[in-house]
Length: 202
Length: 318
Image (cartoon, rainbow over the protein chains, first blue to last red):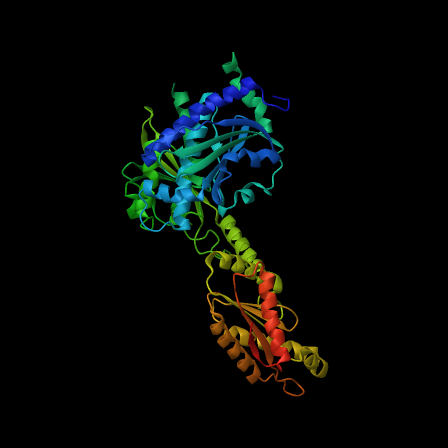
């Protein structure tokens, strides 16, 4: 994976283990919300920093978003999970979780954190188990509420140049709920990841 | 055999010692929310003796915890065997502890991030729930101060220093937005522009500090006369402008007339003579013929010019 592009075989492996992990996350979400979750197709890419915006193509129609990010690290693999939530989704999520009354920004934050806890937690757990590693999760950070998508990703400081990104767009059947889970692995982690999955290639 | 048991005991002892002393809160409850373990952080910050907490119901030990919320979070963690995180932004604190720095700290209570962890037994079933509590007061306070400072900066960048009315840049932004809203809704909205008559003479005869006093007086009259929903700005040196949303031109004329009378009645006291000034005003209602907001300004400006031509201290409707 030292080259510019992601090896096709490796991409397939990552896609496969992501499928398993996010399936579990979707199952938990479905149980929490008591609503069928459309199984998404994950998109795996090796991405330059400038391309992160493009990774969010499926969210282009979102006018205003709220987002949470959470770092994870373990077995020399490090990265960040980024959950981007379309603000129009809150009404339906509130109904599904039986929140009565007005949806204040405070309630939205509660809902956002509930969903983030489940999707990020379950996805990371699923990935870690398959890779036979264990991750420590840092405290999640609210990147912002009611932002334009561009404000979210552009201008954020950081030194990374390339990252392995796994994008998982979640949808709820029959509901207006859209959120995107992005798992970003640092460049340093790529070699370790490659070693960990190499046995699956044989 | 017995040597190894001693080793185990020793290890267990120092592990407990570390848990007890670590500067992070740790609390374990069973599935009925009875407290079964906690560490020194929880004991010291709560001021509750272990015998008053252990074995008792969590919500009796800490009556400030919102029970519904806590049970809801815990249920998800237990059922889904999945960690949950809460941040101070979501809820400033779960356990109502005093600030760690009672003397120099600025907030009364400790801001907390918490992690809810399902604790499984040897069969892999969740038997207990562990809550880890982090003191994030410093981070929370500085983030809030930063946000406050940013809001203040934003406000400052919108204001004109001398009059504390909106400056021209921000006022025009507002007009442009109001203009776009008009094109959609088409409600009546009016614009008043005015300037101080013979202002150059005031400066020449009484000096610039007196001129500034006059401008400040006019700004004060504007603030006292308009309604809360109106948007006043200092358009130029001695020129002012007010946007009157949802206002018919006839009503705007009345307000303009009041402005004229109030300014005329003011006396600005200086070290030399007292100064009295008048203003000339132009009023223009929005109409669908305008294609840009600058045409609206031009229209009000034309009316203002007519007031000047008509002898000043007048209001003209475009």
